[in-house]
Length: 313
Image (cartoon, rainbow, N blue to C red):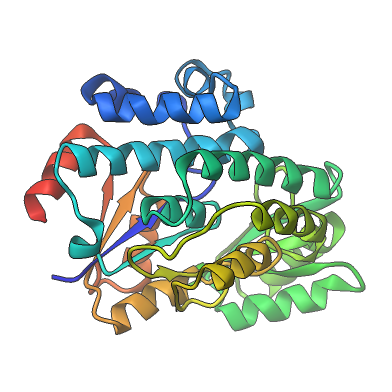
């Protein structure tokens, strides 16, 4: 069995996430405390008590999701004596999950990762005034068809494929009016479902360039070392270990499409038959089953899940 660890992105957050981990494991509590200290914020309290309207804010959701993933990793390493390099061939993450993956693989320190994600969330929100950008899911269309819909809908505005999540599941991003046009065009082109998403900004498109510029400056001042196992990067859907290249790809990732479907297929082509989603929810495990049913995918986010994984390693 050849295994990869993958880490979820925004949308998997929920009030109460990480609570059972903190109750069951002291190492998990330590991670949440370290993230709170790094941010100077009672983020874990927000994760448990809400309000939900504050948790879903990009600047809170991003470090919160990373904290849950890293709490699980800390438990696996301290309670289960996990040696990532011995047990796992690759790490990968969906959008912000790429930072969780790098932290898990020892490439970026936990405190630095929390601060970067807080900044990333704020920068992405600042990049486009509320209401000027949007995203939509186009279901039942191939990436090529979805890209063609976006190109036709643009009409001088930004409109592009943002997430190639799974077979027949593409998300587009861009100017609000263009996204509305794309939804209608997609329906005409045979999309099973085309709908705007409830997001606060048009992520992973050219409108995010101001945020990419902020991240370039922030990442230039952060220590990045080679991960203990290669990262399968969102931008390239290929493996990377060089710190300078990782830094470059993290900047590009803000405006580039997340090539998740291709990333899963790359891992399969390189011998991976098992993906463990480390963190809140089970979005990536579900996507994996849509991409290739030969790849076994399981979510690891409860004490019971952790015990099961440790028993399988």
